[in-house]
Structure formats: structure tokens, C-alpha cells
Amino acid sequence: MKKILLLSLSLITLNSCDFPDPIPVEGCTDPNAINYNSNADTDNNSCDFTADILFYLNQEAGIFLYNQGVNKITFHIDGNSIGSQYNNGGFFTSEIPPICFDEFFTTGSVYWSESSYTTISWEAIDENGIIWYNQNTTLVANECLKMELTSKKLKLFQENH
Image (cartoon, rainbow, N blue to C red):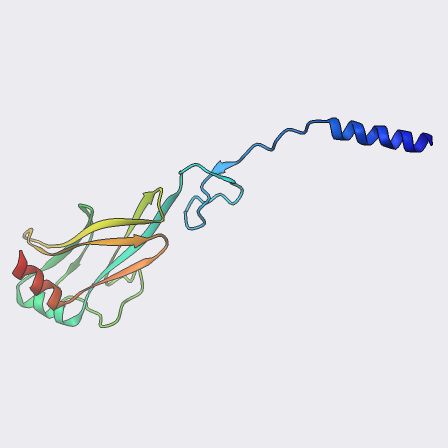
């Protein structure tokens, strides 16, 4: 009987104790973010994201720009120059999408916050400041978006601008 009474008192004591609620861990809860916190249980809108975008010319675009006397095409993302491609007896071209960061083409990295996608504005400008092409494009976190410039795109853009 004493054992039952002692056990009952122990259970009553344990049940009457208030255990504090666990402190929530705030942080980025999106696994696509570069600062993802797997321990976070409350999202605090602090997520940061990145994606890459590769620019390349197909063969017809390279020939077209060469014949137009273009010596350099510089690519800009949101007004910032990310790199150039040069006409050294012809531009480097590819008929299939190259891998990101291929040394013969131009790749830029974009960083942003809050959402796992963003819209950027990019343009291709020659050494004389002529805009040969521009476009708004949506980037998704962790992707390498490959943007092919074709002679058809370049000509159509020039006709309309």
C-alpha cells in the first residue's frame, strides 16, 4: 500500500509540474536557400537564394555579329556588367547549351532574398554601346539558366528597336 501511495504521489507531482514550451528556432526554412536552417521551425523571411545564367551564341549569331563588325559583346544583368565575349577572328559559338562556367562563354551569378525565384533584366551590348538584345527572365533558385542568342533573335530585336 505504501508503494502505491508513493507511486501515486510521484505521478501527481510530475503531472502538476509545468514544463516550459520549447523556444522556437527562427530562421530560413526553405531548403532551396543558401542559408537554409534545418533546425528552424519558424520562418523569419531571411532566406537568400542564388542562381547562375550562362550566355552563349549559336553559330549563326556569331557569324551575324562578325559580319556586322562587332568586336565585343558584353552581357549585363540588372545593369551590371558580368563579362564579355570577343571576336578574335570569330566569336566562340555552340550549337548545344554549354555547361555553366564554361570558360569560352559568359556566366553570371545572381543573389536575391525572400522568394525562391526572381526576375532579372539582361542585355547584350557591343563595344559602341549598341544594345543587340535584351530580355526579362525569371530565375529559379539553384538553377543554371542557359540563354542562347541566335541570329534570328538579334535581327528581330534590331528591327523592333
